[in-house]
Image 1: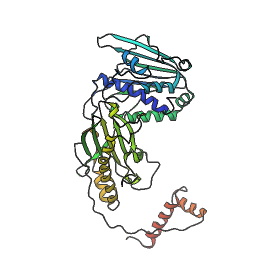
Image 2 (image 1 turned 135 degrees about the horizontal axis):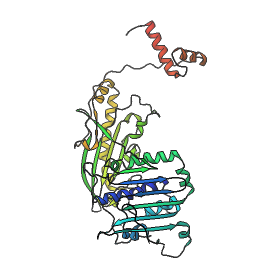
Image 3 (image 1 turned 180 degrees about the horizontal axis):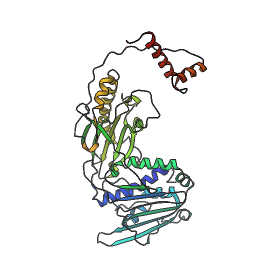
Image 4 (image 1 turned 120 degrees about the vertical axis):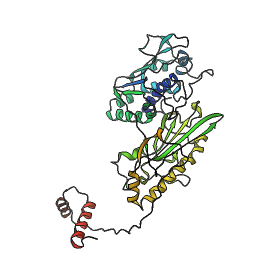
Length: 434
């Protein structure tokens, strides 16, 4: 079945992609560069997800009757059909498998204004069980007249939800994670004013910023490539988003680590976020595996193409096709950016005070404000000799350790901290100042 290789979350993102593409089509279908000044504030996407029904509606221009007949509700695309340029979520198999994954009673409504200025509306009612029970081709769906929506746009209502959909939409954790994913993956659209609501609550896009000073300057380079004659524009931005951690030991309580790594953006949509895997090169070709020491780094690579087929996307649009030639040619440039940061964090361990001072002097700037520069600039630190540490290991009865912890201020104090504090106490008392 066509729904097996896609998650419920992917289905919802597929439907959002269609709405976003509709908004961009209304704005003239153009490249979504950081500095294009596009304003999407007149468009909104509302999602209602509950245990009984799922609804998504937008005011993003609607689906035309031709698009419905040739793409969305026909199995096998017409060779005469064309997709909007600079899109990512063309109506087609993605939309069908998305609604099939959600439930079995579906009604898709669209209102649009035709080229001759007439406002038109139609609906596509689908009963998946009845449709599956029919062996007679064609397997296309009926398109019927319908009352107009309040604004040109699309409304999809799904009832008789699958067990998986109903259970997930009843889960606050699922809905919270979905909201977080939407905020991240559509951040570049949300920051242009697009409004997305999940169960009535607005979704706020992530504001990705890099720190900049005389000594910390992010890279921002652009170049052109092509795939089978289709031009692809590539832009790479990267640098310090935050100072590296004080300790190189991972700390699960650190929210920040989940934000760092490489982001891959295709036609404005983040398809891979905060990646620290081999997909973005970590642990390959002499490139070290991601280590907590490298936290604080963010790199973003934008691929922009008129034809979505030229983008290095997987079919789920949630990762990168690493066999894509345009992506393979981009990876060495990404590696150079990462290598600079890795080298800096290695130097930093030998000159912590100097590094902290320079890092604190750098201020956060939005990506669009980063100037063009072919390489990242990072401070050259002067290493200071570090005295070899002495490790002290000894055991004491637990009851005595807890009494000591209580005497030091907290019975829950970690053993290691108790050891350090008692050493410092004894050192001050017996040795005094250095």
